[in-house]
Length: 230
Image 1 (cartoon, rainbow, N blue to C red):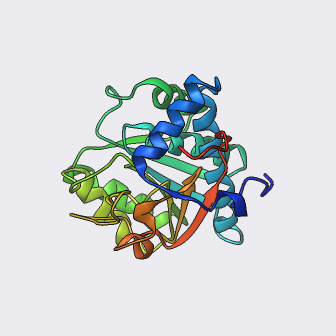
Image 2: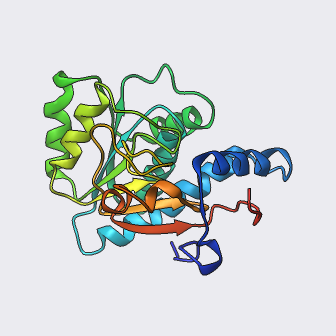
């Protein structure tokens, strides 16, 4: 994997989550860019950064994913890591029944590839996640995306707590889970990332209040959105 889709100068705009959602819709409805392609580009760019973070380390990653499109980005990321020889497993918070659309498609692909997939539904699953994190070299945070607000509820709060106590680097996709991407506030548990790969444009919440600390090192990557201010 090359580094051709990492941050570039013309991408350094900061927009609200609502504006990003409008731009995403514009890409699909006006320009005809399928949402599956946008998810593929997001996950692949995250995998590039994950491989960079894993350089010189044991090639083992743990993806903790939610049921929305952020989880779908994580599934794509894991697929590319597997294809590059990284041992990776997924912990999906709650079950797979509510996965829909592109996220479900990419989840099923991982299953067809034989990727280890576990379900995290609460405290009874904490030992398994703790063990996996203890044996890993990198966590892929794909729990919540830019649509999240409020405080993480069970079992999401417990998963976030376990990740934060894992003592291995965390790569957050788009925004650290638990952070409000609009105002940069965390009303409850929030991932403390080593690196955050945010897609298309930086989000307002990554630049203020608790955002910079939670995001860690911030990279803005191109996912082939049209270059138009939403």
